Length: 230
Image (cartoon, rainbow, N blue to C red; front, side, top):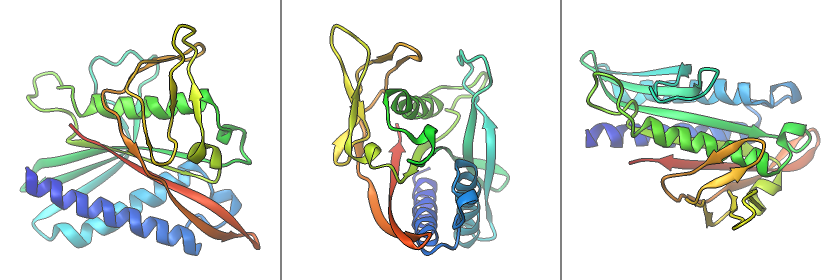
């Protein structure tokens, strides 16, 4: 299992580096209409698939899928939860390693990109979903649904990089966010309109920032990767 973990880490790390490089150069997501979470999902999945072909060799397969149904049997959502990207290393017809990936793409010019506790709650909720995916066992199966999870975010809104929020618990307001060079909280967060979220672990947050030419001027963009493992 450890060999497959190392293999996948090499693939996903290189795919992420290549994605950022192409984004910076305007080789992908260069136009205004292509700056969206859907295109982020498509372009990053394509980069993972392309990189995987170079690494796994002829004896293995890296399968990459979009919008995979969340397999947690304890799901309490009204609508089925869909995982943005799933990756599976197949060796001799058997799945050996799998990763669930959640993505966020936020632009400051877009109302949905506005920094606030409701937005940050949803970021934490995605990480919570990933934690559950790598810890639950499906019915009649002795192993978790996924071997690991990854959370990726791209934004040009410095608020996500610089700020934190406070939850709505009047007794003890919990500060939470994805502030650079800080850690996520593992305390329960309550937001009145959305409910509760609680991460099992605390994750160190380290954004990567780049000044990128867009539309005849320079924009600062921020890139984040969080590894969710058992």
